[in-house]
Amino acid sequence: MVLKTMAICSFFLLCLAMSTQAEPRVEVSHGTIDFGYVHQGQTLTHAYWLKSIGSDTVRVTDIWPGCGCTQIPIEDSVIAPGDSLPLQVVFNTGRFRGSVKKQPKVTTNASDLKIRLYLYATIVTDSQDTGPLSVRPKRLDVSQFGEKTRRVAKFHIENHTDQDLKLAMVDSTLKSFEVKLPDKIGAGETVEGRIRVFEDRVETEFEESLTFRAEDLDHAVYTLPIRRLYQPGQ
Image 1: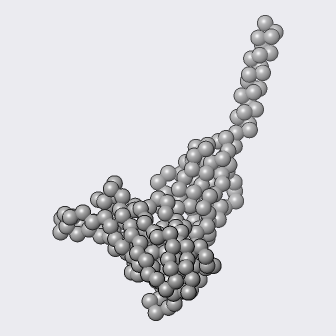
Image 2 (image 1 turned 60 degrees about the vertical axis):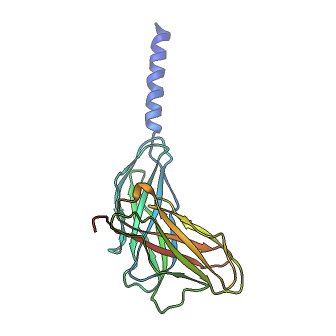
Image 3 (image 1 turned 180 degrees about the horizontal axis):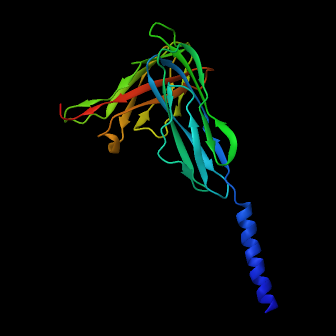
């Protein structure tokens, strides 16, 4: 009887210890995005990720976008242990010019400290230089008007340098399209890239963006906004 009582007490003490130790903890992955060169008046998107790394549920309790040019719509605010939650940031370049830095902030039940997210961009006008590369058009439109399905749109990248450059995607997560980007671009050459809207996103409208960089150069990052209007009845 004594042994049984001791076993029961040990069990409850173990449960108490486990419940006492359970706590929410969170970490941020992909907490910084540099959109690089982009034109005025464009809508850009990027997904920051919060991961629950503790033994208890993480809850997002407050979001501060930073200014009216930035939005963070959120569908869910609960992250179970081991799971991740995307925070999709929408940034409108408006009439900004030059180097821009934004710091949206997020508060969770894991800490009283705000989580800082970092957003950078170099915003240019049509007449300004965009460095070693130029991208045409300045915004890609893959809208569909009418019954004929339209899923593909092309863009062109021109290399103004005297060296071959490697190209790589920077941001392609949580997008409504897939991207085909050449691996490299020769000195003085122009190459073609394309996007293809995912089948399950054909009957939707969106404003998103893709970001790529020239790996061989510093500060050679570019973002191409992408818009889709969907009006099949016209």
